[in-house]
Image (cartoon, rainbow, N blue to C red; front, top):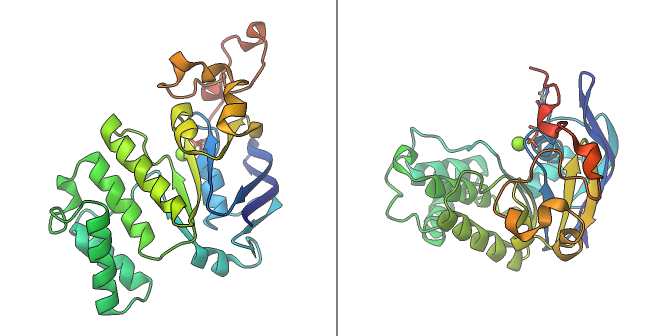
Length: 263
Ligand SMILES: Nc1ncnc2c1ncn2[C@@H]1O[C@H](COP(=O)(O)OP(=O)(O)O)[C@@H](O)[C@H]1O
Ligand SMILES: [Mg+2]
């Protein structure tokens, strides 16, 4: 079953074309990784799919619901963990979770049960009564994801879930993501790291200059992307190198990162 189906999706900011006709499908209980450097349009894509901003053209179905015509049904099916944390620093970890439970209209006792289970699952029991200001980066991300899971979403958008994390926290997050998929959740994640896409994704695509320039299984793509060479895998995708089979002479100094940025 296809849980996310995107056809011809376009988005521009002014005359800056960010998404230039995107097609992709994500099957149920799989991970699709959208790979691209800073400014590639990953967050824009997540914002469109989670109904936060509108697309200029194209169609998308999320959990079987038309994004444009049934946004409420889409919202009910999804969870989003943004690039910038939704965690409230004035509340404790537990209070953050209880707030989410309230927002999802869970009853008081149900909310407490759900929060306790998530604190346990994400190894945050000792941190439950502390404010996130005292947390490590990995703990913050885990709390952020736990907050997303309060609503029991069938589809989760993870926008750069491990950017800035140390290797150990990254591996913990990877395992959490794998466990989610094993439980039937469908995940679209964005990342700058080919290694992350390689580790997690059933399928991945490279977003470059508004287009998906490559799409396939990690094995298929590693044979085609210059950045897929093993000695590059630890680093973010180099801007301007995401395009497969681009002649060396054409690369020059031009890169995604050097595109003019509005604002
Ligand atoms: N609200 C906005 N108004 C104008 N430009 C924007 C807006 N949001 C994003 N952009 C631009 O769109 C491009 C893609 O941004 P974004 O989706 O955040 O990329 P990524 O998440 O891959 O780093 C960037 O050049 C960014 O400056
Ligand atoms: Mg982003």
